[in-house]
Image (cartoon, rainbow, N blue to C red; front, side, top):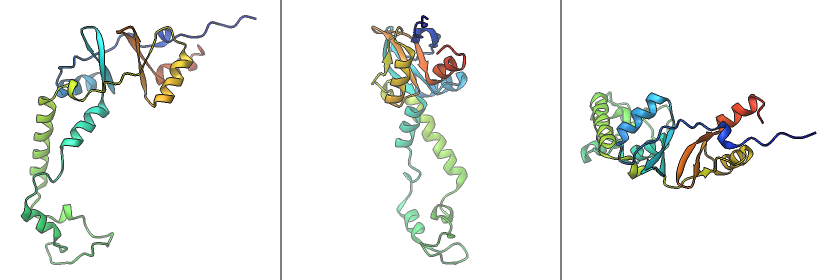
Length: 188
C-alpha cells in the first residue's frame, strides 16, 4: 500500500494576492482592504516583499495617536472633579451607579467631539503611509513546503496567514482557512 504524496503549500495557497506599495496612504489601504474583505496584505516594492500591513497595524497606529481628552482644558478638568450632576446630586466616587464623569461634563458636546475625532482620523489616515506602520518581520514559508509545516508555523507564530515566498519573490498567501478547507475536502 502506497501512501499519497504529502500536500504542498503551493497546492492550497491563494496565488492571486492583493499587494500594496509602501507609499500608499493609510486611507487608500483601508479602502482597498474593506472593498476586498481582507484583514491584511503584503507590502511589495520592486517585486520584493518588504512588509505586511494588517488592519490591526492600522488600528494600533490610530489608537496610539488619538486620545479622547487631548484637547481638554484646565477648566474642563476642574469641572470633571465636581462630583455632582446638574441638579446638584452628589455621587460617591465608589458608587457603581454613579454616571461616568465623561457623561456629567457639561463642557463636552458629543457632536463636536465626533467631528473632532473624525478630523483627527482623517488627517492621520491621509497623511501617513503604509511604510510607517507596516510590520517588517516577515513570517513566510516556501511554496514546496508540506502543508503540515505551514499549520505548525501558523500555530507557533500565532498568525492567521503566511506569505509564500521563494527567494524574494511572493508566490502567494496561505491561511489557516486554506488548510481547514483542504482538510474538509479530504485532501489532507
